[in-house]
Amino acid sequence: MTERRIIGDPAIVQEETLAQKKCGKRIGVVPTMGALHKGHLELIRRAKAECDFVVVTVFVNPVQFAPTEDLQKYPRTPEQDWELLKPMNVDIVFMPTEKEIYLAGYDTYVETGELSKRFEGKTRPAHFRGVATIVLKLMNIASPDAAFFGQKDYQQFCVVRKMAADLNLPVEIVACPTVREPDGLAMSSRNRYLSLEERKQAAAIPQSLKVAQNMRNAGVADAKEMRKNIQAVLETSPLAEIDYIAIADPLTLEEISVIPSMPQNLLSQQRGMRLLVPENPTPRAVVLLAVRFGKTRLIDNCLLY
Ligand code: AMP
Image (cartoon, rainbow, N blue to C red; front, side, top):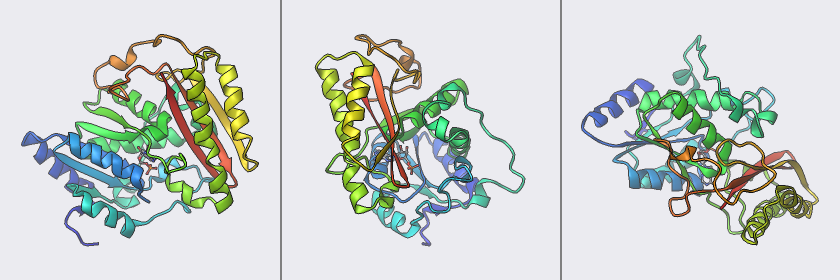
């Protein structure tokens, strides 16, 4: 891979993006950990549609993995990633090594707050600290006007958006809809770990979210009842081990017992916070879940309007 657009050195990316910015270009960044799939490509498409100069990063960030997690095993497919990226014609593919990102003696981290302690944070206590740290570094390296994230990792999107607001980052944090397989399973680099049987049964996840949406459409406001029905659908898969099912405020991620008929707060209208779906801009709640199939832990979510 000796293509001119692949850069590993953060200083070169910084120089190039600053020069583009000076020329008035709108810079977009799409952070990924590689093992790319159609979900990632959608983020890139959106970034290209909205920006003049697009940087895609491919970096498996060790700082967001606990020692017991799957860092070593995490799929690394740089050649295939490049094959997918080539036709996308992005301006820079930033593929640094660990040493290029975390220089010897590296010792500075972003401390995230309450948002990062729930749900994923309970199972993965240092995860969002690692995510926030690498995202802030990428922002400083590429000076983006907009950064594109998937709704698939909804809590991550919330934590990053909060960091951007709290730390006055001059960047718009954009969430893009989850891209799914034909049976509804959210695309994920981790799906490849599933056995055939696990993969088949994992379709219960989107089915359970559909039930939540149908209940909402039928006017159900009782979160406990909704949770019970989601659980019942998941339990139709003998291999599913439920980690959590939560119905929460879409901005604060605090769990709620009643799904409100009006949006609870207008925080999302603050500057720099693009609403998730422009044509349907006021989600009342978010359903978040994590389910294990064998050794693979899958997360998914849906917004309720
Ligand atoms: P990852 O490589 O898993 O760290 O993901 C990089 C970005 O792609 C994150 O913002 C994810 O939320 C997003 N992403 C992952 N899977 C999907 C998907 N199925 N649809 C949309 N975005 C996704």
